[in-house]
Length: 223
Image 1 (cartoon, rainbow, N blue to C red):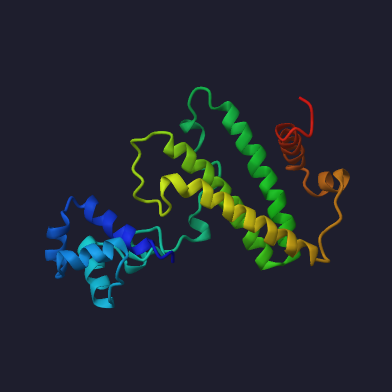
Image 2: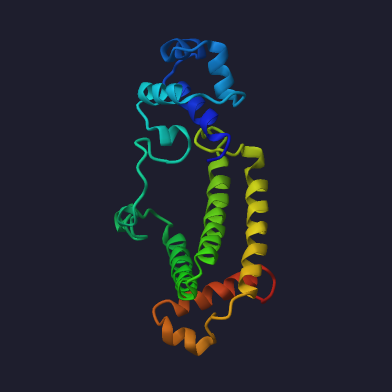
């Protein structure tokens, strides 16, 4: 749990309910000054207040503490994660062909990466690569989200102005850790174009196209 999660969520829930700090403090049985300290992260609350606040706002303690993104505190299960095509054809609007094609390149290529990772059996490496990819998606979503100044920032823990910097730093740190981990590994598979095509007949073309596009973007290939 990030230190800032509880104060942020507590403040967000009060504002979402349309309550002043004074009214919320009265309902929660604490002084306005103490509630202000909780919302600013100056003081940590006790278990009694945590339970009372969870009941008052109709959320779980895990949600209040930032341990769950679901208000009822449930953890997401594998079978609850929709397939990448779950949105269906009906949700594709005009001009959506290019992002759909790009998505397939990315998703198919990630499938290859994840399979190679899985073959190593190294949980730490798998987790670090997965987190690197998740932060990358977070970074791009946050930039798109921030493109409209009117979008509320309440469900983000990182402030708008520092989110990109924090994400970049975290990714650089993970890059170093992943590289160090890879240097110690002895069981990475031997790969070349033919073996990749043979092992991943459905995804190899997507991967090779992604690699070519990426190298063009970084200036390693000419268009």
